[in-house]
Length: 178
Image (cartoon, rainbow, N blue to C red; front, side, top):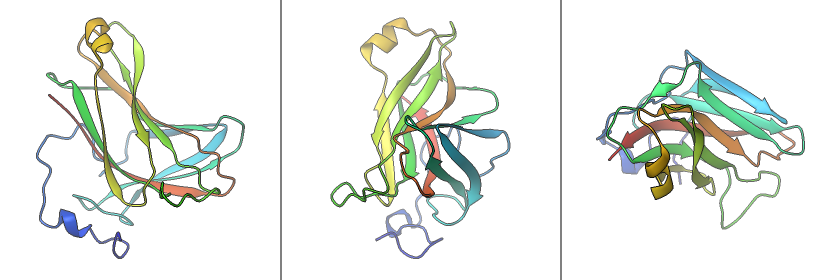
């Protein structure tokens, strides 16, 4: 039970982030949302809170056969080294054990670019929850062999946005670490 709107989850009472955040959506200046076969809007919100006072509220609707949403900074953000893993907090809108067919769960991936211009994605998984959840990923061995540092964060990609009516998820902090 996430508690009343605007209240931090009880598990987070008194907790602070332990790693530096690459971004946390406290300020949405310089952020862009793009819909491909989808309409989407990003706004600052206190509806659901985690560590801080604000998060990003992403409201979206599918409009075509392959709906996809990209949330990205206007310019890529260089990820400080060393790192080989990342955590991304988000709040979903569909329980995996009791799915709502009118709200297909979103698939999330992190979009990255290395110093040589190689664009690649790290899949984080499917948003099968209606609560704050920590998704994480680690660079694969083939990524580590190929990529040239420094690496930049290019954006977040959300696929499977096949809902015909507006739906909302919340986006929180993201950290890269070793």
